[in-house]
Length: 277
Image: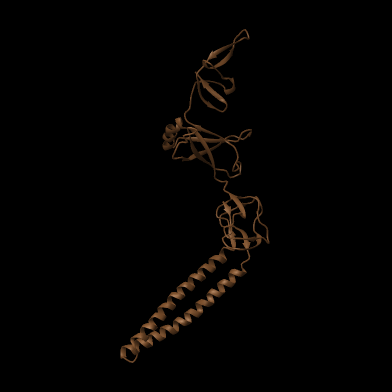
């Protein structure tokens, strides 16, 4: 989330440190509240004035209503008194709305975190003037726990992925390349509603618990989906498989320490190994 101000004003200070974890509702920035406090006081004073005027208008209306009923006052005076009373009633509603807006603007002078997450670099310092919904954000907050990983798979696997996801038996793992930590297990939470016709793939998203910040937004990870478990199969390192004019093959080391190419049929791959038949 790009944090922006909803009112114009001067930044008085920040309430967090760069890179800190903040919770939803925590104060982030404080904007000078004095102009908004003055607007609120002015709106409240206008309300008192309008209420006093309405009280007089109600008295006038009651008096002209009584005189009109007795025939001592014209119908026009009665209608004018009623119109004045109704007009001031509407004015008070407008003044109350102005008070509500002033209170809301005063509340917006404290910029709070709309989500929980990790803050980035502070892009404005105390003393800077900011505008409501300015193009430049005050700070960026990234939600990191849970965290989403976006990836694409060939459309040929889509039917099976949907079937297994519907059964709740689809395991998803995320591995950071060159990391010694084991893969993190998560769950599939999104399947796009259309296949990319240019690449023949479809976009998916998986959600992972990330309490220690192991994964970082924008980071490259390797995603594995466990489509099926193959038992009692032969597997070789992916780099051992060669491709030629007649298909895939590997080299077999014979007893006399010579090698012989053997044609194979490559199957699914996982963790750097490919099943062969």
